[in-house]
Amino acid sequence: MGIKEKLAEKSGMPREIVLNYPKLTLIGNNELEIENYKGIIEYSDTLIRLNTYLFMFRIEGSELEISSVTTDFISVRGKIKGIEML
Amino acid sequence: MQELFKFFKGYVIIKITGDFPERFLNLAVNRNIYIWDVRRAGNNVYTMKMSAKAFLELKKVAYISNCRVSVIAKKGFIFRLKSIKNLKAILTGILIFGIVIVYVSGCVTDIYVEGNENLTVSDIEDRLSGYGLKRWVRKSSLDTENIQRLFLKDNDDVSYIAVNLHGTKAYVQVAEAVEKPYIVDADAPCNIVSDKDGIVETLRVKTGFPVVKEGDAVHQGQLLVSGITDSRFLTVRYVNSDAEIVIRTWRDFCREFPLIREIRTKTGNTSTSYRITLWGKTVKKAKTKFDNFSADEELVTDQSHLGITKVKFFEENVIYETLTPEEAFEIYYKEYLGEIKKGLPEATEIVSVRHNSKEDEGKLRIWIELETLEKSGVKQEIKKEETNNGENN
Image (cartoon, rainbow over all chains, first blue to last red; front, side, top):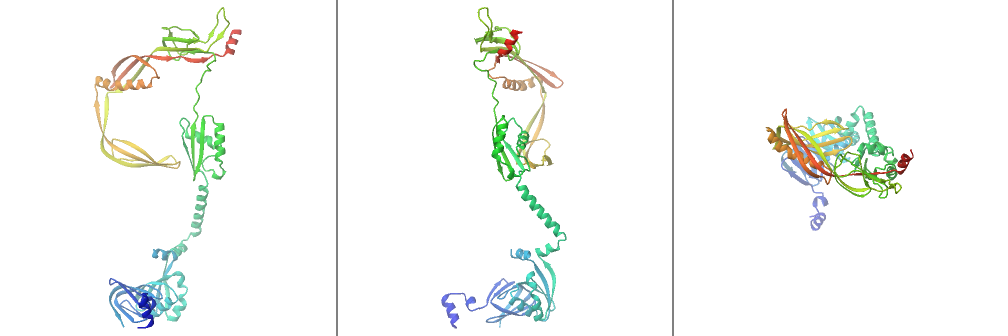
């Protein structure tokens, strides 16, 4: 465990802020919000691959669309069938 | 809310065509361009929305990512405004509207008069217009205190006036002056004359010289007690006559009453409608589905240009009852006599009541004759100059 991780744990500060860990929020199976992502690697209406500071996410589904996107936040809508960490 | 904000700021729907749309998205996002609703529209074709302002920064992004960008649609309030052909005319209209509103808010649009009893509202308004208070006059040009002062000075029939300006309305409160009765000076010489026809019942003279005696028939305006005396021993004297005079009079009344009586009973069904008037003209009448009804009216708004009246209709059953002359007399006589009694002068003593009735063409004619004892006598001032002139002539 690194110093930053220990500091975050001891201080009780949110790790997604201190360590830039990705934070996923899945609402049902049709909306996924990801904070602290780095970039879009691949986008189609059945597959989205996103890069974060820890993993690469592979989101599979159908009728996928990016409902909004900023530098550190992305929101995906559609019929989400699976999320995979690579 | 966010959608509304986007609509007001304006946004564009663009189409991206290229091998690496992901690269385009990443580059745009890193340049702080907010993008939303990214959808795949075909093979290597994507649509997305972004703010109209951010679109201008896309040229470099498109060049680096080797994508072609084209605008599909422009949405939002700004673009709608630009698409209006007669924008100048509309803006001019808005400007004129604004000027009119500002001008009108500085004027008196309505005058409300309260407290008048005998004087009409239009009469008071006409008089006020002479002092500058009228509709569509600038409020800044009005000196309400001065108007009040001058109005009271010039109008003797008004004892109090208050002019208050609230918004565009002028509220005028008036109190009418009570006309003072003609009072003969207690020391001024005067006669007493009869104010009605009849027979003198009692005559008690305190001062003055009686011209008639009890039992005499007198007519209206006849001299009863004189304030002038002329004897062989004394010179002409003038006195203030005072007497208590009671006169026996007869009053006749006659009225026709229908023998078919209308009896109305409420069924309990009600309906409400509104009557709207614009500048005194009725633009919408209050309507009801009832054939027979009575109505109560309640004023909702009463302004010079707009009047709204709430009318509540009560459905009624109407039955017509045919009365015999006897029944009709029984019903109407007491009612009619009560009406007559109310109209009699104060302190009138009814000595006797005689009545008669006759049926005539479906109507009942009722006569009532009242024999009454009433106070009589009106003081009439004696003008010495006239008397002297008469003597000299």
